Length: 69
Image (cartoon, rainbow, N blue to C red; front, side, top):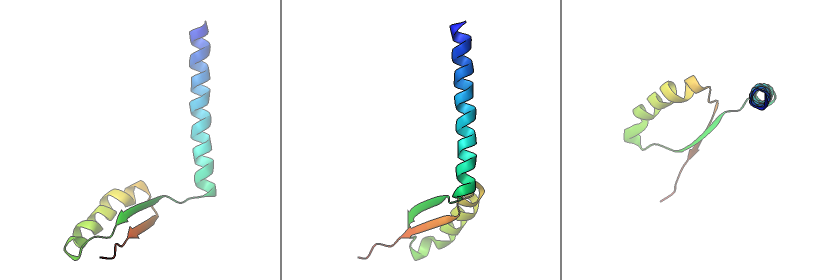
């Protein structure tokens, strides 16, 4: 009986956390990613990464780190 109550409690916790995530996405729909800017030789590969990896995951904010020297 205690195991059944524990399972129900865990299920409720998971369901409520999923609902909280959906609410957060509707309030603040930012999905960001920070990465170093590519070298000029790697731009095509970087664009492919954006299109094939970030876009399907709905990343809508990209921060490029530019290191000077």
